[in-house]
Each structure stands twice: as structure tokens, then as C-alpha cells.
Length: 424
Image (cartoon, rainbow, N blue to C red; front, side, top):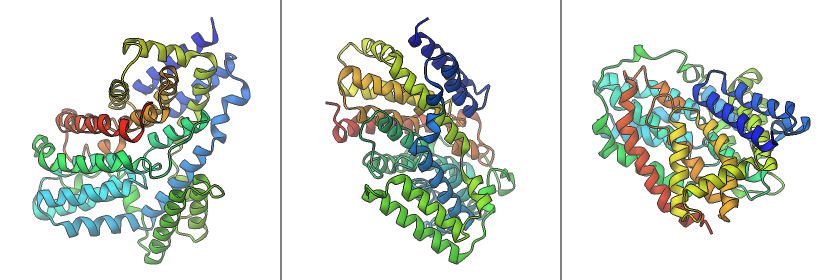
């Protein structure tokens, strides 16, 4: 069997395991890389080359900075202040929680953001006799949307940029995602306040229903005002440095420097810093990079791309490309990790772009944004899962409000992506 055939079989197995999660995601990802090495498709050195990728370092640094925000109590303090200032009426509380959720998740973990704001929102609902089920799903959706605003807001964004860089192409800059991320977040908030809320259930849930493990990050903080200031200023400096895109002070260097400074100043302990890193994301990304190399090296990626292009008529329009890739990525992410969806599809997207002579940035952007639109099920993304119990939701409760939000997101992508990142 040819190397291309072997690669396609391995990729198919990886895809099935990603969807079913019979094995942990990180095990599946690294297992795919090892399998390709054992079968001789890639060299032994290439099997673990993903671990030395600079994107992995960027991931780790930002995880630690985000962890410090929660450990010092900075994220909780900001969130509680903003949510309370907006008021306790259904619409005003929804506006406050979604605005804060979107803003925080643009630079920190969307899971941590949801976990720290959830008890605040439920507490206000408990006092004002508002059903938490009317507020928690919008909060989770906002955390997912906010991650699309910056490069480090959500793993699919970093994976997309890393895939471009690994292919020798210009990666996305820190705030480049904001062109689509900000309109998406604003539109999502408006949609939930005007239309989406009509599909939300009115189940009663109380603060006592909170899963202790789900809010561990929120309650394990020190609320030290001095450390809050240090952490906040450090985050600001790191974001500014990343936005300036300095050649001698790269994104990875800025993230790691910020993380090291926070450990040195004891804003986060060394052990807590290690615990803040999402190792599943790290190893999933590191494992899929060699698989991407194999797809390119063996021509397997081109075979897939040729099939997709053929289905779209041979010379698809930019709108058609965006539509198909959005549907594919968004469909997968409803039932599997958004990180896995992006890692699986980005190499294929690059092959499609190459096959039709299109701008690879436009193709990768469509895949990355769609991978973050996991709104229709409680298993698509951790924030959705976190609010499942406390909100008293059932699986089907996510479908209608989530479907509308997916449609809003898709329309915006079809309008904005071809304009900001022209396909040709």
C-alpha cells in the first residue's frame, strides 16, 4: 500500500476516535503520529516534532497567565463587578454576563471564564428569583464567541495560525481574528437577547446544584489585591507586546516571559502553573502536526482536497468554499473537541487552498471560526458542559438556541471572511 493510502487510513481511525472519544484525545493524537512513524510514513524525528513547535510554547505561556488571573481572584473580581453593575433584570443581567464572558475569554480560558462567572450569575439569579436556566447558556455561548476575538482566545485560532506557520506561510497576527471575532460576539449577544432567549427553558436550578469540580478554579483563588494588580498589568503588557508583533520579541516569548514573571512574583505558584496548563490541548496539537506533515508529504491531503473540490464543481466560488468548510468544521465540533476539529481539518484546508489557488488564510479562518461555533449540543465545548447541571438543561435544550446562533455566525462568516481575507 502507498504511503498516501496508509496516511488516509490512520487519519480515518484518528477521526473516528476523536468523535467517539473511546480513547483520550491526547492519546489518539499522539498515537496517530507514532503509528505513522512505525509504518515508515514519517521519520522518527518527525513523530515528536510537534512538541518542539513554538505554538506549543505559546499555548503553555497563556495557560499559565490565564491560571494566574483565576488564582489571584482577578477574573472573578472583574466579572462580579461588571455583572452587578449591569443590573439584575433578565436582559440587563444577560447583557452584563455575556459581555464580561466574551471579554474575559478573549485572553483567557473560556472554561475558566465560565467557571468563575457561573457562581456570580447564579447568586444574582437566586436573590432576584430569576431562573438560572435563562442566563447560564447565554454565558457559555458568550465564552465561546469571545474566544474568536484574539489569536490566543481559543485553541482553534492558535492551531490555525500554527498550521499556516508550519506550512511556511504567514500566520495570523494577534488581533487579526478581531475582524470576525468582534462582530460575531456582538451579533451573538444581540441574537440571544432578542431571539435566542425565546428558546431557553425556564427550569429552576440553585446555587447548591453547582458541581464543585466545575468551579474549582473559581473558588481556589486568593483574592490578593496586590497580586491582582501585578497579574492584570502583566497581561496588559503581554497583549500589547503581541499586538505590536515585534520580531525580536515574538508571541511565544511574550507569553513565556509573562508566565515566568507571574511565577517569580508568586502571583501563581510553580505547582499551580503546571496545573493551569491544559496538557490535552498541548499533546493533541503536538500529535496532529506530524499527521499534517504526512498528509502533505505523501499527497494524501491533495487526494482529499481534490475530492472536495470535485464535489464543489472543480472551480468553486469563494462563498461556496467558505460555506462548505464552515459546515464541515461546525458539524464536527458539535460532537467532538473544537481543538480536535481544527487540528483535523486545517491540514486538509491547506491542501484545498493549494488545489484551487486560493488564499490559505481565508480557508483556515473559516475552519477555525466554525470550530468555535459548538452551540447546538452540551458536549461540543467545555463551557456548554459546565452549565448543563446548574442550568437544569437537557441535551435537546441546546439545539434551538444553538442552531440560531450557528446560522448567525455562518452568515457573518460568509460576509466578512471573503472581504477581509480575499480568496484570490
